[in-house]
Picture 1 (tube, rainbow, N blue to C red):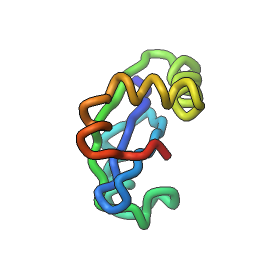
Picture 2 (picture 1 turned 90 degrees about the vertical axis):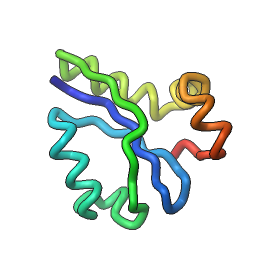
Picture 3 (picture 1 turned 60 degrees about the horizontal axis):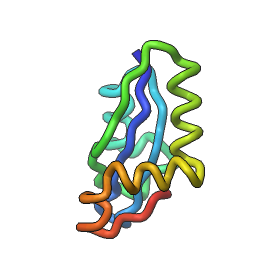
Length: 90
């Protein structure tokens, strides 16, 4: 399985979108400060993920969600989380 995931930084209130073939292992790396992009944004909380059987499909979805239209879609899909706490999509 391949995963596209969204993390919320409880420090700066921004969201991080990532891809991984092993979600549990990747989350541990984020939590332990071993990922450069989120090292100084901890603590982090997993707020969303999607699972795929095909790696290419998952990577394309990650790229889409990081783009303008994808970010807009996420804001709609996660609107209660987004409105309540005014998170930013990074």
